[in-house]
View 1: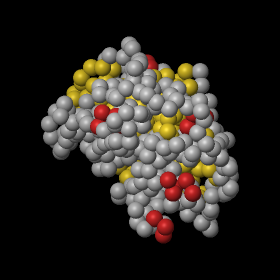
View 2: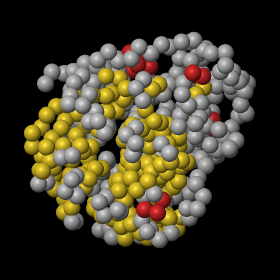
View 3: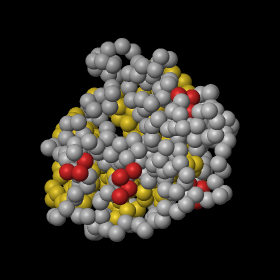
View 4: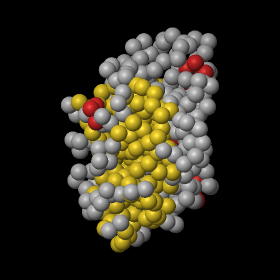
Length: 426
């Protein structure tokens, strides 16, 4: 198949700054804050069962989960990333580092696919498996624990080998989700922290692409999405993304710190969006940043403010006119995998692997978060699995993704510990 160019895209105007956008002032932030958490979920330390005596399980590990839940090591999988359950109940695990996809069942592992270019996103539509590689999306017929009939669904996606990037691509891993109508959605990360040239590239980077049902040229579905690694379809068919936002944001408000990169501000800004995508959705990067409400610690329905480094006068994009972000997480949470499922007694909702980022002092703690599904949107963040980081910020594990299995248990990948956990939810 020929390398497909992105069709048309969207004619989105970058209009001047609205006078309705508040120009100033917010107090300098000096406290450490966390988002509003749901009440009624009590976390209890529980030992991680199983393990093979190899680091980090050469000593007893504990994780905190809701009371009555249990955690065990289901498998040791070095560099485990995203997860998907196949129609036959096998758990598929992508490993970009090794260029393969593994299949796990009954304590046994086998290699389903190998020799791939940074395989990351996995998704099923019936018996069709979609795999997002660094430069393309492939589809396979899955049957009997094997794949056949490989087809290239989308080619020519940017990766480090793209001539114009010269080997420099900070967010080359891609995710994939399949809409209820069969449309294919692919996340295209930015090449860097604030690389605004991504918005003019072809294919456009820092975006979510949509491929029509049955195939065709990819087109821009949402833009200004710095690194939408979390990508999934909600129960009502809507497409959602969990975004790794930018680092080292400068203080935007009037005063002696305006334009400076200060730790107390960077620690809490910008929030990491959990956003519902529609055709033409604009998430602002790198010109606008969703702003948390630190007075109430709320990350829901937050508006955008100008990025003082990239959009100082508002001429690049009118941040006040952007649709507020539906939900979010603390700055530098580094959300990766996103899925929807029934989390035991918590009910239906979104599951997010919080990897924990480097750009915060102290570091944001890794966890698995749950956001309840309520009337077509998501409620506040709830922590349902944590304990990977000690008080000094040292980590023995970093969750990537969480999915609900056919047995109603929760399966969690951890690329630092090299493990898949099975969490029973009573």
